[in-house]
Length: 153
Image 1 (cartoon, rainbow, N blue to C red):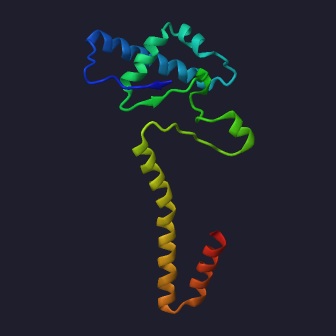
Image 2 (image 1 turned 180 degrees about the vertical axis):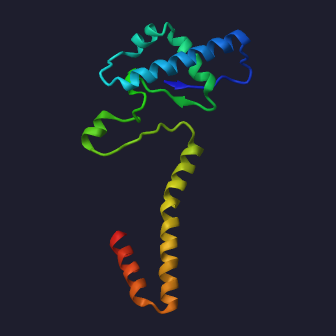
Image 3 (image 1 turned 135 degrees about the vertical axis):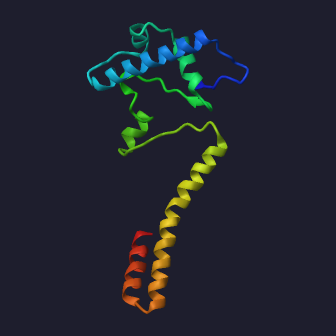
């Protein structure tokens, strides 16, 4: 489910803000208990009944905190600390994954650029060191650096 933040036009009364804050504290406290209990198999609906909250109240509580749109994954309460994953992909590619849904193309582009240029920073530093060693006349050390770069890339 995609959750949007409330618009600037949405104003809450003092009583509504207090109720939302109280609900948030209850949810945090109960999720902490559940996340420590690995045998807990409570469903989301059972969790809502347990804390005496409707789904609408829960969603409202989450939306109040949002600054930008967010994908809310359907999860069991004991899975709150687990990164997003795809069970089909996980069975095919047994590695760590942290799947993020793209809701903001600009943010996605910035993430990709930062990720790509992250390795270039280290590479540039390594190449500068090799160049400095060559200028000093220390060919053996710079040659080994360049050979390790060749193997790695």
